[in-house]
Each structure stands twice: as C-alpha cells, then as structure tokens.
Picture (cartoon, protein in one colour):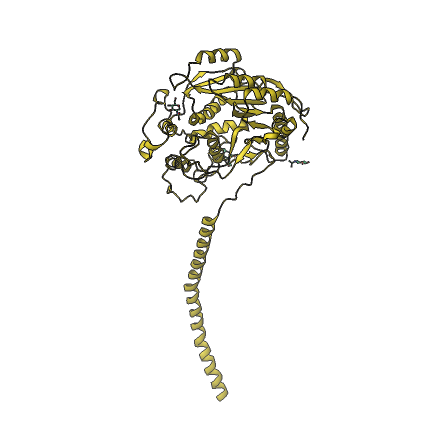
Length: 459
Ligand SMILES: *[C@@H]1O[C@H](CO)[C@@H](O)[C@H](O)[C@H]1NC(C)=O
Ligand SMILES: *[C@@H]1O[C@H](CO)[C@@H](O)[C@H](O)[C@H]1NC(C)=O
Ligand SMILES: *[C@@H]1O[C@H](CO)[C@@H](O)[C@H](O)[C@H]1NC(C)=O
C-alpha cells in the first residue's frame, strides 16, 4: 500500500510537471528563437557593413613588360570607387564638383548595364548640352566657384573661362585621309603629332624620318605595315596672341603634304586636351579602322620600325588569348606610365593646378610626349570623353578617361621620357631597346635616323 501510494504520488507529480515543462519549453522557443535569429541577423549586417566599408580595391601593379590586354572587361569601371551611399562631395574643388554628378549618373553599379556588346555606351549623354559654335566664347559661369580666381595664373583663368566648350570647327581638314568615308582598311599605325603653326622644321624632319608615310618594314625582319602621319594644330596667329601671321604658309604646307588638321582654338599648353578630344572625333568619322594610334609631341624621336615589331607581337598575343576564350574589345595602351602622381601646387610652374580647381591624386597616366593605343580603344575614348570634364593637362585627361573605362595603361621602359644618360646619347647601341626618346631637335632627328637605319646591337 505504502509502495503503491508512493508510486502514485510520484506519478502524479510527474504528470503535473510534464505539461508545465512543455509549455515552458514552448514559451522559450516562442520568445528566444526570434530573438536569437534577429540577433544573428544583426551581427551579420554589422559584419557585412564593416567588411564593405573597409574594402579597398586592390592596387594594380606596374608591369614592366606589356602583356597587351590589361582587362577584358567591356564594361565601364565604377567611379567613384567608394561605397555608393557616399553621396556627399567632400571636396570643394571646381573640377571635382562638376565631375561628381556625372560620375554618379554613369556609375555602372548604380545604373546597371549601359554598354552594348561592343563595349560602347548605349545612352551617351554629353557633358554639356550641345553647344553651338557661336556660344563657345569665354564665359564667367564658373568664376564664382573659384574663390581665388583673380589670383590664378593667366592660363588657368583662360582655361576656366572656356572649359565649357569642346566644339571647335576644323580650319584645315583631310576628310579623305583614310579613303572615302574611312571605309578602306585603316593604316597599321596612325601617327598623330601635336604641333604648332611655327614648327615647320620639326614637321618636315618628322616626315623625312620616323613619321614618313607609307609602307614601313619591321626592324627585326618583321612584317611591315602602312604608317600614316597627321599633325594636330590649333590656331596661333595675330588673333590669338603675339604671333606672326603664318596661316598662308601653313595652307601651302597642307596642300603640299595633306597631313595637317587645324582647329579653331588658341594653341596653348592648357588647350592641348582639346587636340585629343577633337582628334578622337575626327578619327571616328574619318579613319575608324586604324589599328594603332601613336599620339606624341613634335620634339620626340620614335623608333617606328621597332614599334611596328612590338605592335605585331602584341596583336599576336591578343589573338591567341582570344582564341583561348578571354578576348574582348582590345584595351591596349602603353607608354611611360606614372602612378600616384599628385597635382603640381607650385604657382610658378607650367603644370600648376590650384587646390581650388582640382583635389585628389591623378589617375595612372602615360606621360612624356608619347603614348600608343589601339584604334578600338580610341573609339571608346571618344565616347567616354563626352562624360569627363575638360582637364588642362592632356596626359592626365587621357588617364582620367582610361580610369572611367576601367583600363590601366601598361608601362614600357622603352618610352624614355627623361632621355638617356648624357654620355650614351651619341652611341647608336644605346638605342637598342628604346622606342621613344624625348627632346630631340629636327637636326638631331635627322642624324639619329640615318644612324639607326639598322637595328643597333646592344652595347
Ligand atoms: C549589356 O547588354 C548588352 C545588350 O543590351 C549585352 O550584349 C551585354 O553582354 C551586356 N553586358 C553585360 C556585361 O552584361
Ligand atoms: C582655348 O581656346 C579657346 C578658343 O580659342 C580660348 O578662348 C581659350 O582662352 C583657350 N584656353 C587657354 C587656356 O588658352
Ligand atoms: C592558348 O592555347 C594553346 C593550346 O591550346 C596554348 O599553347 C597557348 O599557350 C595558349 N595561349 C595563351 C595565351 O594562353
């Protein structure tokens, strides 16, 4: 009996406890599980925000042997690179202020895919509404954004007054340069040389040496290619400064050689960017099938035949990559690449860019008087230049356009911006691995050319 009672009482208490524990468990489940899940979610969100904020895109290393393609991406690169919710513009410089809304408007992360299969922009909008040529007069519209405008050097002031305009008519044109409508197969290498009206001697020396138009053989017995040279000029006469009137002489030269493009803007240092933009437009309309473009100054010496060999090699490499399945629009651009450059803040120098005009570092760019890129890339540069505000330094402007296309220029040590050591300059063997040297007078060009007719041996 006693045993029975004990068992009974025990089972009663168990019977009473079990439902309580079950409801308690349910209660716990109901209350704690959502709390736990929300807690986990919060941790996840916090961690992912932290990771996103602290993410820095990897730095592109400088390559010393050009591999040709730097990326096979057809899309535009995201710019700005920072998280997309950073809508605030933290610098008050004029150029950054003008460019910021455009970069946001055309940021592919925000806007999605707006390039077609060829990598061309499908809704190319203009930096500025199509301004008629008549409205391309100096304009005060941005002066109030530059608190120190009155103290800036003349060239900077002139630039700001006319930077809204990139449309200038051609005064001397060569519409049939690459055949009617540019439909014929383009030249292997189109050499575009920035020159000024008075530099007749330099242009003639270039025509007689490294810029000779026609079929040029490769140096190491390589396949040759058609080379054409064209000179890019602005206007430099009594109406744009204290210059002699050489317009008629220039016309004679143009009739004689048919290689002069001249636009109706003042030919000054800060207007050089206009030559790039207007040349890209001219190229798209008149010579869209050129395979490579060399753009350089009229005081450089280019080893055209070596360059041809090099370009064939690059094309060959790119072709094998395409066959193996990673080809794309060809982003080939090579030169003397400068990375992590900061704007020059010395008011007395030619390159001075005030803090009130531009803040930040320059993108990687090819400096020093010469750069080579593929014809396909030139056409894309023309498109993207519609979305990048004019910048006074032409090399940097090209870098800015490349940056927005997601392309980094490739460094080649053969582009000698800073010249050879003094004692090596006169020895032909020192030029063995050189593609371009800077600062050569017309006389030096002629002398070098005759010395370098054959591939010099390495010293
Ligand atoms: C973008 O869209 C075009 C067609 O509209 C397509 O051909 C192309 O492959 C797309 N690009 C990407 C990267 O999705
Ligand atoms: C560039 O050319 C335009 C048109 O000739 C001129 O108004 C402007 O002052 C020039 N800019 C510079 C920086 O010389
Ligand atoms: C392409 O593939 C071939 C063999 O299929 C190979 O020999 C060649 O090295 C590859 N080229 C590149 C650039 O990967």
